[in-house]
Amino acid sequence: MAEEELKPYLITDPAEMSVRIDELRAQGKKIGLVPTMGALHLGHLSLAIASKNECDVTVVSDFVNPTQFAPGEDYEQYPRNLDADITLLSQIGSDFIFAPSPAQMYPRGFEANVHVGGVTKTLEGAFRPTHFDGVCTVVLKLFNITRADVAYFGQKDYQQVCVVKKMVADLNVPTQIAMRPIIRERDGLAMSSRNRYLSDDERRQALVLSKSLDKAEELIKGGERDASVVLDAMREIIATAPSAKIDYLHIGDPDTLGAMERIAGSVVILEAVRIGSTRLIDNKLVERK
Image (cartoon, rainbow, N blue to C red; front, side, top):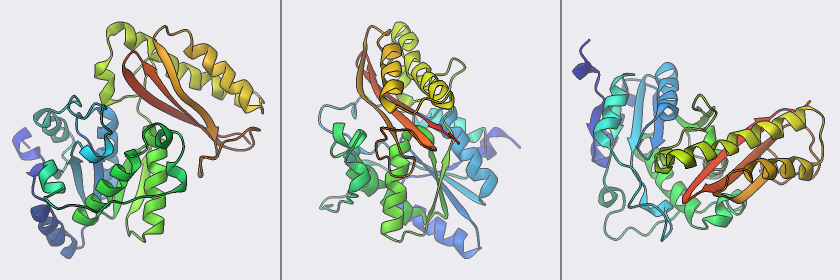
């Protein structure tokens, strides 16, 4: 099949997207959704491939959502390249790419807002207080537009997945949330659209994120139960990067994200670190029997 025939069908109008989905659901098709903000990389493609393998129809949304950016954050600079995204999705045969404009998603007079409490108040929520309201609002809109049976999210945004799961449960949204593992570069750096902001030197320094997580896993699996000891070891590694500034390091319950002082059972380790002017997040799930 020629590459042109594999290109996903581009839709920009939410109403047209809904009509297409109605037609497909009437045929009994299972719909998979991969919500993204574009600037696609192999991490995003792994989600689209999972959807292709498990669903009849795959929709990849490509929308830089303004409502999840606070004033002074990088909304205007956030990388956008729809043509490159379409080319990447053509390689795996995605069915649709939904790329609306902000005006189409938030028309004049739009005033609704989705707020989830509890799990949004710490970590990313503490540093970016309006962030998850914007995430939940746009994700619920995407769920309503696509009526997805399954939505695929990457583990790299672990807290976001927890927030979306809570929203879906509380609001009886009939969409299954599937989390897939972090995709990393060969040297361990978690793939992220923001990695392209890093200079060559900062890119090397950024490896302290994955190295600190690996050290934490080593300590926990080696029997360390004191979370403060593990966090101190992580800080020592991150401090070797001259431009690194820690926003948070956290060891918590994988479901509630509640902080753990004594490690027991499985934990999630989350971190947010600024390398130069670029803010990076990463995490690791560690099972301890």
